[in-house]
Image (tube, rainbow, N blue to C red; front, side, top):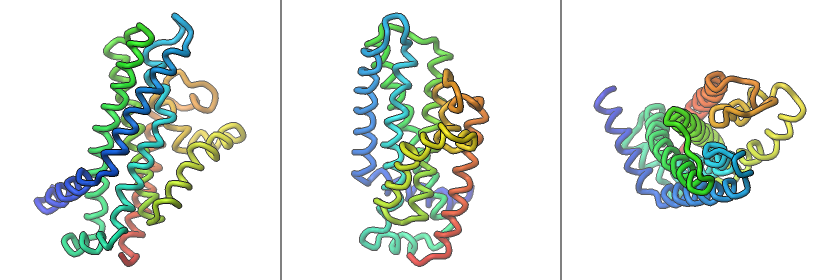
Length: 241
């Protein structure tokens, strides 16, 4: 990695950490995840709900926070002419865009690990159960990986759309309406990012949600991310700021 690339990643990381919206989103997601873990743990059958069941169940809902994080991290550049200032300092658009995504991945991964770990700890207190270290690490790693990839996919979509509300609306409709509807009707839905990624964080999934192995599901989600990043990078290079 060149010195300039490291410098640009550092600059993007500094900008990302300075955005109040990123911290508020991460904190709100953490609190919501912990509350959901308490609810899932309390609602579970005694002796029938494990700490990982209750601790990982919130991921399906708290992924909203990571979708918001990915969108806001990108679209905030388009307000107040900030992007023009950024491109003046970093005129290589491809490098600048990729540096932003690298810094976002680092932030999202950290936030995801903390969020999932907190949910599992809280669920353990409520359920009165413990998971083995191997199971806990597998659950945290899979869930954090899925949430990080979801953040990057959301950021790439936001870079293509360049507007906060349309990007958020499209992503939320897919993840919470279109995706589940298609999942019940066609085998193709198995390879959509929300369905494919399900096994990454919930190994006990059945039906189309469990059709792929965790590694295959991760590979499918990663392929979607790579495709979206490629399209967003091309669009970013060709369009005016």
